[in-house]
Length: 285
Image (tube, rainbow, N blue to C red; front, side):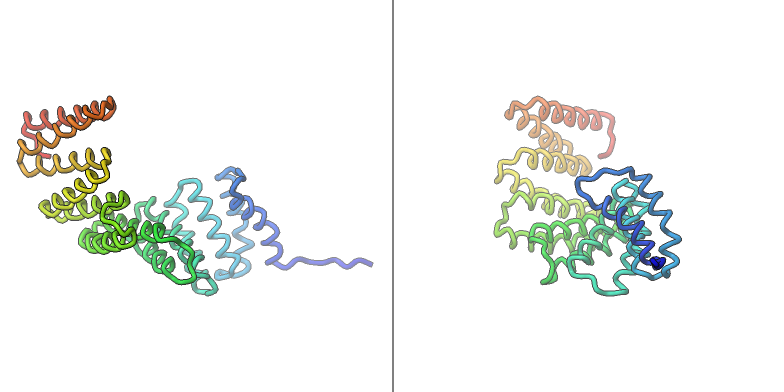
């Protein structure tokens, strides 16, 4: 006679949860985000029955967070991801790769949710674990995480911290790239200019922009040159230096015309016209 077998609560949870998890993580799969969120929410009683700090509860919370990220609903998902990561970290057993990946996911969602202090905290944790000997990230990726930390610090209004962070990052990037004229430095230098500007150090902001200009010219990169000229023009306008500002905006027009690029030229002419209108109306930058 066959005996009846009763699944344990953990087995009943796994039977419902695992197919949903596999669907979410299937790179080629498609699913309805709202339906998936509803299906996962329906599993909450099963997970809670296994304990508030169970591995199943942490897994469910994390998968809900992942689905909210895919749905671009970062404010809704972030608290779930934070709870799940705290539970997983408390249990131990996470590899360095698990740690930098999960902290990075939290940091990215926090950026999207404009929770910048939270983003700083978790991106810093991600960078810490990415530097661990057991992690697998390349140099560019590690520097990229640190660049996002600088951005998060800036957006959090922590401008002095952002400036100090980005100074060190620029030095490390120059060393890693073994060059002071690598295009990847352009964004870092521009970030330093933005940090200095927010600290009302316009002279330092101008110095960083001049360094970025030299980089763009050395690379013969029109986009870098035109963008930097625009920012220098705005600085000159705000400093009540209309002659210098006009020369900078006119330089953009001349470069665009020489490139015989209609889109670039129209943009440069529009910027020059806006500047001249502001000057006529006596508007500040």
